[in-house]
Image (cartoon, rainbow, N blue to C red; front, side, top):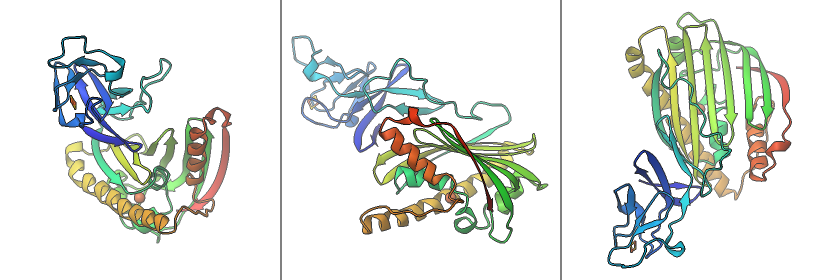
Length: 319
Ligand code: FES
Ligand SMILES: [Fe+2]
């Protein structure tokens, strides 16, 4: 399967129990390897039939009597692994020994949870897409009636904790969301527990809990395809007081509608950033996570994450 990560065309393929990711260009004559097929666990180029294993080593050159393996015939490989139905590609050739592996996705495989998966391209930068997924103030406007509404205003406390793994905001004293999702998640209303998290390098996670019975946790894993195009793999796990089979047809279209509204707004944002030749932001305290995400991404780019000290901050906002 062909995909693009950080502007690099890749081909991802199954090799027995494993997965492999190679740069999508045959080292022989530049043909896309993604046009080929998997034969005996190796990827076979469609032009002259050279084959490559998951490390990119050439394993067969049809008609050639010598050994196919040669440094100059190696396809470029990227580290690659699979977990919870997602394939993770590393922007380096091998996965480091001390790498902790992909994170667990909460709710997947747990009794009582309905899991909805969605895959959606957002025409925005990684930062803009991450912020959008974790941005509370826009929900009353852009998704008015589906999630929160401007009419019901509540003063809540937000506790922000940041360290070199990411940043989390806990919203304290928030009533159950109004609108359709609120009515499904919390039919009796009441106070909800709500966390928004940015987890490096590129996950936006939103968690709602109402007592022991209702729990929604959306783990949105983002892949920067190019500078202005970001793919979201959303895994939404919900546990509700009613059976999952009844909930899914109701909740799934709502989530898809919310995601579509966000994609349309990010397209407008991106067009305007490009029209003006760059980004320029001003924020208030209620833009709780966006500035932290920006800062942490910049620190990560510069390899300075270890310098990020654990910090705590409390602010108040109206939702
Ligand atoms: S171009 Fe791939 S085998 Fe020749
Ligand atoms: Fe949104």
